Length: 163
Length: 217
Image: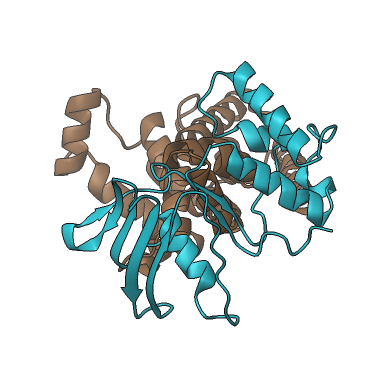
């Protein structure tokens, strides 16, 4: 099986008992009431929290609690759009996108411009996040997550503010 | 006006502020971002100079750092100088005495950074170290400035601990606040008044500056 495989469980701080598979190109939506653990599950996949169990992507083992293996978020090929966007407030839109990019600077800037164009934010490159509307912030966060060419993109309430 | 004392004060304040900054950043960052057993004890130790009489700190410093004590003897062997009644000793005791003034603004600044910003940086591919340099430190700029300015100003105004550990050696350990005390004892009110006015004006300027930064944060 290729794609993402998740088998995790924990009691604290949020009860989770999840088994799911998501093949390449597949879109999986998590639906549940507030407090049911949707965000916690995304955090586990991103490597921000380590529950018991296993998380695999293709032949990569991102988490295997029995073997004491847990890749950090930097190593997992994930893009994460946070519920409140978590844009870096002291950096421009362009810098938010290029900061973590490992490409040479000119290529990173070019790539960032391409993503900003695709999310219809061309012309806002030099604006600070505080000067953007909610929907614009969300699209910057989405473009930032896509800058890593992630294998898995995690969207936490991603389109709530998009018109 | 005792310009030698003024120079010693400035040298001491600059040395303390510069040397204390990395240590304060390290301590504040650890306290802001981690939970560990005994954390409250560490915080209490850092804040201790706020409530401890300077004479108590000075007494223990003299006890530990005098050349007859093992630590003082060892330090003299290594550095070639005594750590009591000398400028290095003054710097060392100032580092301890000004520690809470350096750590607390930085601790508040680090604690004010939302956890999700760090996590977003990690998910963008930044290492913990890169996240610290590119996200946390720039966002703590106001805390950094407050920390340095308060440390500088507090060191400039030290009296009791300076007198106990450094004594009153002109050009070496006599600071402006000790010189004021010295001039008052000699009934030289005009010199004491001039130096007091200088410290008063400077202290007011510093506190105004820190409040202005806090307001802009």
